[in-house]
Image 1: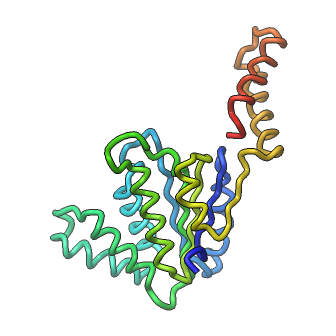
Image 2 (image 1 turned 90 degrees about the vertical axis):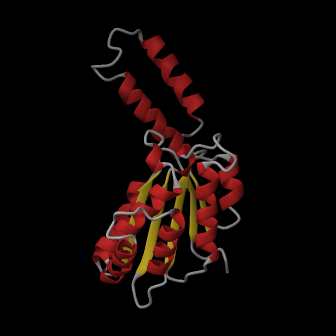
Image 3 (image 1 turned 45 degrees about the horizontal axis):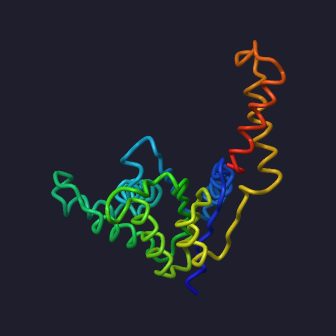
Length: 216
């Protein structure tokens, strides 16, 4: 089935650290290879497919001799790094790593896809990333697991929910809202923050921020 290897998570703040700890536990027992990428709105290089692919193939090659050999071959093909491989070459390298037989399950965590821009160019960086996820899922690789984490943006949900074996949404759960409220309250009532504000004003700020957070 095309849905077999994608978990789509709708969270903010992201629980990716918990996911990472779990897959690292599997990695430490020799049952998994792991790679993590955070799409950072503050860094244009971390909002692009090319940035994702370059990071992931580097991580996998550092953890697997077979993956290292594949990346080394690409490095040699591009004149020992004097030429930069394009996205297609990086994608081929990545897919070849995923297709290695006899290796542990590979866990790919894609955190904060929503931070990829969605309003620049005919094909936006976000669309490119979503197309990449769709392509990876379509390969139907039995030993590959992909976790895609995002805010509940309409375009992202429309693209990924139909592909996912599991979809987990926390943004509208009471526990998530309570965690946000507790965090905001701790900041507002910190001795170093707003110490001269009236309690009434502090409570109004907490209430307003939590309502506008919408679980995020």
